[in-house]
Length: 213
Image: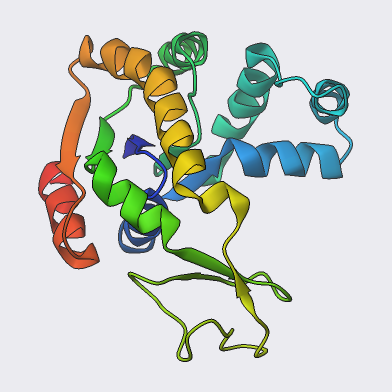
């Protein structure tokens, strides 16, 4: 099972990916984790990536693709994987297509979680984080036991600046601009599977399982 999972901020993609990983024994391949690992191990690719990040620039596609290519060779990924945060651009998607062709493999599905903007805004603006330990709560899904206070250390919960409505609307606009070309790319390959991302977690997961089966 080789899957790409797309979904806007607040769509619950992370929660659903964890459930798929647990039930289907596949690995999650996150480019964010890969970057951290390469930088921590001071690899050649990690060193190159760090130079771009230190300058405040995006890490080029060829460096990201190099990290992904190394990872896909690992035997523990033979049973399948979910790609998280990759590809982000059409050149990355084309690079992944090439890597898979060279390995005589192909993607099974590109899952796209669909949630209306107003629901995403409601979910994301309801996030609160502990001012001390950083634990995240959501007033819609997992509110604290006592309003405004962290369950773990009793510290005050804060509403972060990146969870205000204005910022959330901007993040959603950026996501759409980035993702629509990717959806077009994979739609031409017949891989796009739209999932209704509204309702409770188990109902959404059942819709995903129906597609995977």
